[in-house]
Image (cartoon, rainbow, N blue to C red; front, side, top):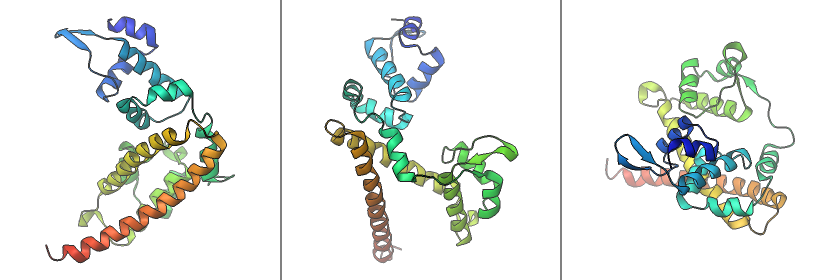
Length: 233
């Protein structure tokens, strides 16, 4: 089928379809000629899956992409597992009253992190800034990330010593990669026989335990690298 029919059957415009192609979420179409592209039923299924997972399951694109790569999205769409988990889990993890949003300029003042760095982190997808100018806000967790980055700076890890925002971007990308795999495994493990409330409670406890494990593993790895790496320096 041609692009026009694909648009009609999926409800996506051609720019959105091209975006998902660039992101590797759709296979390349068959191209009998340089300027001719033919799409098939797999493109239709994947686009409808993207729409459903975004609009009904509220999954981020990184997780959807991971599901598409393994074809796990087909079972997810068929069974609709853990409906409501996307609302229950944040409520448990954040508490009854999550920390309040904070104005960007207030976070800048308290953290010492520059406007330029915050903008750079926003552009790289580490932070999500809502609004602009004096009405720009960060949610409580993004604000805490900036505050922690400010402490990192004050501890001596300066740009001059090679600690640019790219270091924080690397941490964020690793965390996103790790989370995508964890969510996929969690849905596969608990989606068939666990109600959303129980799964949310299990998931919240899992987040705590994995975070503790990561701290221990990371610290151990750093100490090993220092003690054993001195032989290579």
